[in-house]
View (cartoon, rainbow, N blue to C red):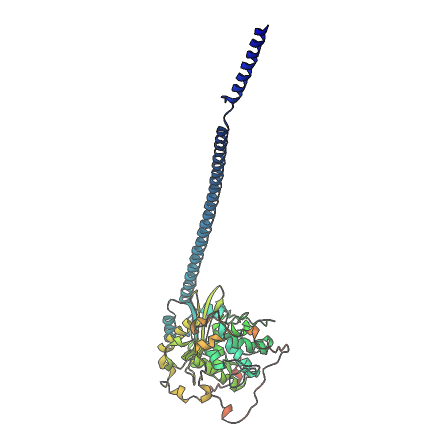
Length: 499
């Protein structure tokens, strides 16, 4: 019995020892604590690597998207640039084609001009001076209205053009007569740093806009009609156009740029002739037959009811334009030219105009040039006119500058500012500004910023000058005596094909 108890005790003890040993001995399925930490770290690294790989893949995908978008943007920009350049090329091509068509039209029209009754020497001089320009030229006698030559008669007779800055002559005459401009050339309402002489010579827009707004469009149109605008001149050729004058428009640009006006070179020739011949509005005539040439006396439409002082007062500025202003490309001061340039966009292209007479005292010739084309300006029209005057110098009976020296002091230009100073007070939209150095930026005294203007809604007919005796009322230029006063009427229209 005892042995059985001992044996059982030993068995229990061995079992306990074995159980304890088994608990202390690490098993293959349960790692030691240190090994568990290593596994956790390894698992974390693997997870981080997986996440990093996914992030890199996402970033690569986004980069591909951005690259594709950049490529599309670059392609769109390149396409836009290509289209823009193509549009520029097409516009340039159209412009070149249009320029060629203008020159071609000029050549074709000159070829079919009716030269019967024209002075062929004058015509040759005008064509040579016009050269490769697209344009038209009118040369006539400012005292009688006899037309010496019209080059490109279709444009000169049947077409009308925006007058650009040549309209400033009308604004000046109206302003002087209405006392908006005094005899010193200053604007009566308020102050302006440029006077009339320099405003005409340098083609200052702001000056004439101020004058026009102070005067009103109704009076402006009234004076324009009085000076022959808006109606045919009466040339003895069929289908002459009368141009156009504004209606109910008080935009400041009508006084400086001629907006809403349309004139013919014949009308401009009549206008500058009236300024220089004492106020007689001549009727241009082409003496076709031998009888008409022999018995040509000249016709006058009417005597302008403008003070002689107003007509005389604009001449110094016209002299200044030719000698030191926008028309100085005439090049020879001894030609004694007085005129006004104009440049602007009208009738689908740039226009360059110059209306002039010479010599200043007792003028023999009136020359009007209108050029069309992208690069044309008034200064180039003045250069063409200068070539005509130079070729016809012997007809001008010049005194080598002596006539200019003998002019009364009030008739001589008295420049008070230079081109740069004048431009500083201009709005720089002129046309002629490329010749006097002005730019669009940095201008002082826009019309809208200056003193209030006086509006005149009522129609006032230009006043008849009071007749006075004395040297101040004596006409500057000798008048032409026209016999048989009853014959001074509008001439009959003679068909071009009639002989």
